Length: 262
Image: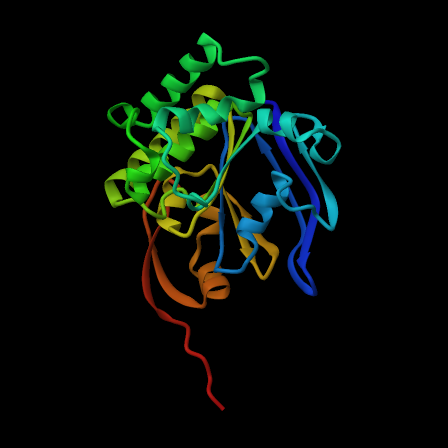
């Protein structure tokens, strides 16, 4: 399996506050990697450094053998699809045209039949056919999230970055979206990296878990290796019980770790 993404020593700071330090990660095609950790641990910052939304203070990001700091934004957009937590603006554009924006890196003189075919396929994959002619700003938060994922898939990326892809979805649509993400990674050999808070969903759908703590990678490995009572206690300061089998641990929260008061 070809390596799709290499992260070598990536660091980033917001002013004097260090947000990420010496992150190292290698991801193959067809692999789903979940970034987990408390708020402020560096998950979103790492995603934005991969996509060159943020310029790292140190280190290198390589996508499909190319250093993203040395290629143009158009070429990056052909290789990396990015879905933020929510749409920055609510705009009166149809769902079809919103997904069509994902073809911008490929368009030169006009929209081709192939572009339209790719868009229709992405819309169908995300179960959005009935919304294709609806206005994006008329949709619910969860429906908008699915449209943004479809737009990223229309880019036909080698790496797909998802920042909290299930944050606005009910439990049914959470499962549906993550099942699609899992299928797309496998069938299209896309490397998927997603920041996610739900550890049980991460455990169920991921090949690899990357646990971040205070801007550093605290642990990395299979769900069974990373999602342990000790790790959750240290990283999240919560006592849990771990259930499950077949290498897919399931967390049952018990109580916050007791903090001594002087």
